[in-house]
Length: 360
Image (cartoon, rainbow, N blue to C red; front, side):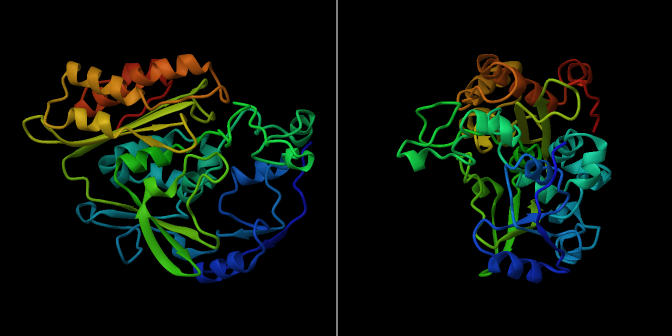
């Protein structure tokens, strides 16, 4: 049985106190925990061994939805704010999100299992650690292969180059981003708000990520994600598709979030297509979105955009299924997503491909 390492547990009652605790700790010695659905298993595998855990469960400021009052109510026309401490279950159960932010609702509904969604938060999901077959093993397994550059690599002690087992000549870690909600939120045009020692800042969610399996977030030392801001969705339709071996529990090995603002005559005014689990960060295919603008979502337009969208996908041999097949089906999944955005009835296709019933 894998046990947790020893740690000091701190439970601040506000964001300011949490920021002070995090900023006051030595680099790498303290970590934030909300639901703990990813961090605690990682600690058992000794992937992360913080000396201090700073719990955000008592920070009521991270709870609720609303543009300014932080009440659990808001006008969708004015945009929407979700506190980082809201659980994925609460998001799935909110009819306003289900109706107006379909991609987010579908993404949250496909995370793990009901028990984990009851604990996991949206803030934790967008900060989810990157994953890799060589990294997501217990300590003894990783020690047997001499570890990897993401954790415990001792090559530098021997004067050798740090090693990524996925691509041994790679100068950086290639662990993949496996968050479900981030691609959906990026497709919806979301921004993330952070509180830190220097105050509060707000950035596009896309700018929150780096294509680096180790330093995958741009979050500064001492910063805490406090809110996710969603802009008004007038005329926008969105959807999220996920590839995994089972119909529940598994992390994505490919995900596609698509959103389009469609005029009354069916012409696409604006669009976003975002790929997940194909790199160390969610990848937005702007060229594919441009290929749709000014056109109706015909079969031809969807096929052309799907081809373009699949080009930036660079899956590596570090998750489930073969990388060549995952690359090939990227085009198909973009097509599925755009067909659903168009308004096609894809329920049977979802049941067959994703083994889920997600009716908005």
